[in-house]
Amino acid sequence: MAELTLLSVARRLDRCTVLGPGARAVIWVQGCPLRCRGCVAAETLPFDGGTTCPVAELADWICGLPGIEGVTFSGGEPFSQAAALAELLDAVRARRPELSAMAYSGYRYEALRRGGPDRQALLRRLDLLVDGPYVASRHGGLRWRGSANQRIVALTDRYPDLAAQPDTSAGIELSVETDGTLSWAGVPPTPGFREGLEERLAARGFVLHTQARRET
Image (cartoon, rainbow, N blue to C red; front, side):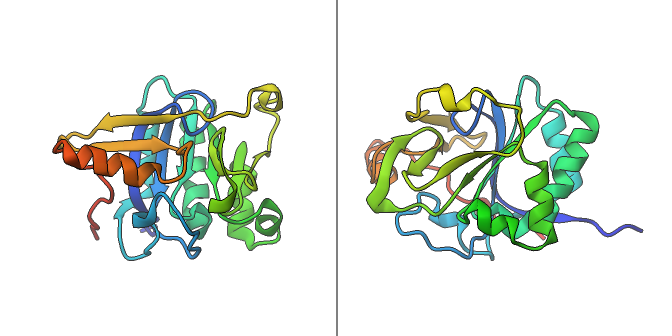
């Protein structure tokens, strides 16, 4: 019997238009060895949280989503679970080869290229990479990224016109979960966005969804 490949997931979203080109499924992985000051997803940093999901189940979920252009991996640090994500992309593209793939990483592209075979395998399957740590002192309202040191690295020729498009914030999206809680996605255009949003919503009786429980 083949061994079941698992991925530790903090959250997933079936449709998002602010974390990459077009409408995209998004998976936030759980766990990150980096500790960027001002991280807007601090709940995804510990490796002992999240929900353990079989890669095959996630592939079924992505392939069943209508009207998406691709999938984006965020976190957490996707390259800490590179082998599972590479396997996930292979399973998705076996059925939906038209879907693009994008990932965020706190590591620079050059460092990832020098990494182990799992990291290189994931790089080979990506169309776009947003690389580099978030640096609060260099915060900017940029497209798909939070600070000026981060780059959008094209790894294939799928999106040749990206450089010609305005490098401005794609904004934030709010959504209502099935249990009635609110969640948000995107890269905040201003520092302190998350804290301010949570305070204002809490004052009106709303609670933002952060982290799913862990299942084994």
